[in-house]
Length: 209
Image 1 (cartoon, rainbow, N blue to C red):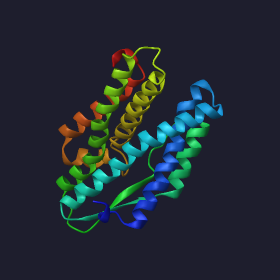
Image 2: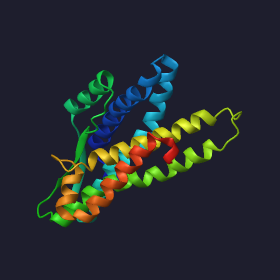
Image 3: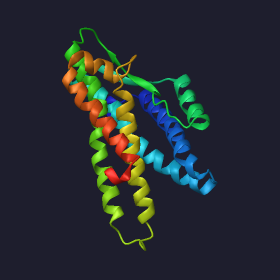
Image 4: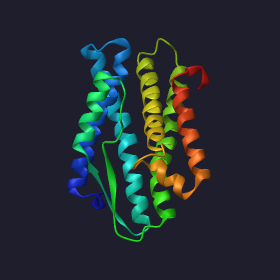
């Protein structure tokens, strides 16, 4: 698998991963203030959760495209990376579009394009499951257990990050995944966007989880 990821693509993925992790960590520390220890904790958590969610999202696009016989590689967008960090710092919103997986080849059908696009958000929704389980399991631990709060935070951050990535990318606008999925299959689009926003809303109301 690694031999199918070029050196440039690895570099772009790492840079985008680091930048988007900083953006997410900034919005997670805003409610309680940003002392150094707290920020570093959320930066590490964001790098782990965003690293899994973002990288697997893009690789899902890549390998689905390759399944259909096309070559595909992720390319970062330096301007959008800067926008993501600045918006997170100033407004508390992450515009999660650090780049895109480019498909090389002609003859991509609407169905293939829709399936390639859906692969990313579906991956993030699937990742919500283990993070949700971590959240539930850590919530039932003995409060005296020293790592309980860290596990709770990791579960919540992982759940929110993956729900955010899925929901944002399912918006049916511009070059986002949702527009291509909607053009291919409106029913699948409806299921995915409802699931993504449903999970995302639930993370802000823990009683629903």
